Length: 195
Image (cartoon, rainbow, N blue to C red; front, side, top):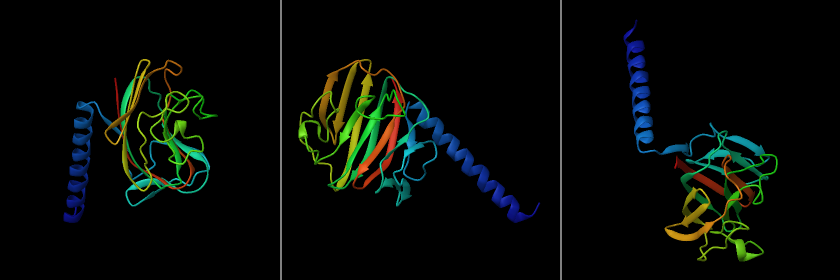
């Protein structure tokens, strides 16, 4: 074996060991990274939105569609880091019950839509379930959603401010979906732990 081959094999082994160690520590804390802004791997594309990796984020600027997890989740806590332009219509859907018709009637939607024509269920709302307790504009800046679903209790916190804390038992379990309908939306990080 040549010296160069030995060095390459050593680097590959060190990298895989490092990756394995970081995975174990993430699992030890209970958190799993579903999206890290560098790949679409692990997500199914539904619809015709032009999802792509750009500058450390997964973004879409055209079309209508979703990134959907192949796994279903029930009780969960998740953090979603996103950026949306002022005209964006997007959302984070949990407990999706019908992947052929993903919407706020077949899942819970943490809304991202500052200029929604009916502002009752604008950014920070749990669409059709609870209007936001505070008016927060997400357009043009980095934002973090914290979403908790435990049994029938649903909590949304946007940029450190609790916007929803409600009881609803309509949807019990299902995949997670990230939406793009209008404007530009970028997701940099999605992390989850089951409760």
